[in-house]
Image (cartoon, rainbow, N blue to C red; front, top):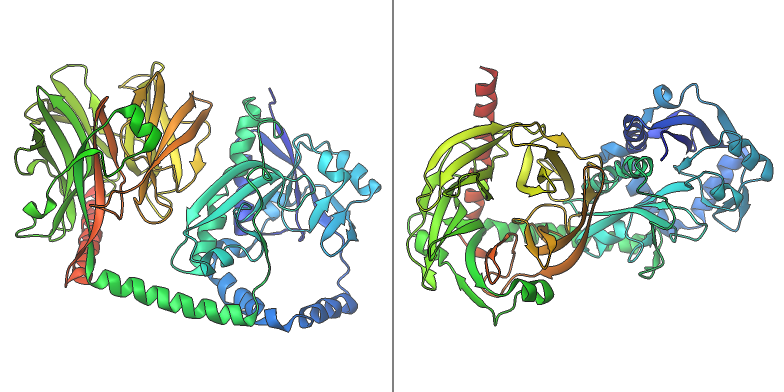
Length: 583
């Protein structure tokens, strides 16, 4: 087991990095197990001849000049993580090696034997590549764990450049990010980490999300190496395994004009749709064997009973979502988020299901000044009670409630400090410890998973060694309670690649310790025809009985007003809570 890793950085400028690159290095150093030992720079003579040569090279392809101008003068200036920062506090004082790679072909670079020997003298464990060309040859084998490089794109579908543009142009819902160990082949290294995030509203915002999402990848791999769980060879995935996507190049002027037209059309279409529509969720009881659900998901032929959400919309546009349930005799008590558009917030309410139908209306059981959702149910030490831990991001901290089975009366509450503002907190008791799975409130609340643990209910939450565990919008954010089947532990997650809460992804937990977490996707559960736009919560009550939710769009002549009022109400509550906290 290694104690420290020796890191070298390959970058084109002596003491200048882009902000995201600086954060990658900082995250690695913050692990406490990485030390910087050298920096490697290409030796380039900035003569008038070289500058003229580069300019003439650009003029050879005048069709790409409009995009180059658009990218450098407009897009890049609106991507904060791409701004240049002074890295002297990180790189200053380090030994510098200036290399002059031999150019083979248009992009491939080979280091000389002397340059390789100079680098090898510092015995680096990792060389982190920022910039330079396609590196091949002896230098790739010098570091113990290889030369690491970021590829901003999913190589199974998009290779080449520019990053994130072609995904945006083709209206692909997500963009990929890969940290790879270079092997010499183009975009065909060994995959150390893979992640994907949803496209944002603009090309610049998508780039910001894509680059910042992967800044923890290198640090996470370093922590696994130190713990003895990663070798950067046999434990990696060959990027050729699932095939390679086409190689894209800088778009010509005609494609850039088409992109502008498509972007304008897309924005206005979405805007006009939202003006007259709102999201409506409802919940359903499913009677289906857990094994069959894991094997084939849900189908129209399954025994599914939906709650008639229109029955609660006579005076207000409301919906119910995030169902969690328990059995009390022959009755099924279902706790839900009960959201009102007129109030702009949700409360926790109860529905009762018996004899194949919903027996009563929606009964409120818990309301606070802030928005409540995701009423997660856990077992209590006393069999006639249960623990209720709803999400409350506006509050900024968690509260756990002790409730009575059957009446759902709230008896007591207890604050639970975690350290971050958690989204969809899901609790588990496993292997003698208490675990919390969640995402973090903010722009990445749907794509980055965090795990915390403690030894007892009275203890303090400790962050998992691998935090953040993964960055994947298809399987990070919790989507229901843990359940076991055939001796295996499963975790429902939200698959928000196409839209928020668009589908469910069920993960099988392979390894869960304080040092290691691994899970595998076993099933994607897609929405049903009655509510075709989303499905983001699954709670297995027992084998053969589950509750789910579903989303559809409902016409509302004042849809824009309702959305705006909800947004304003949320901002006002958060402002009041901050002012109260100061007092």
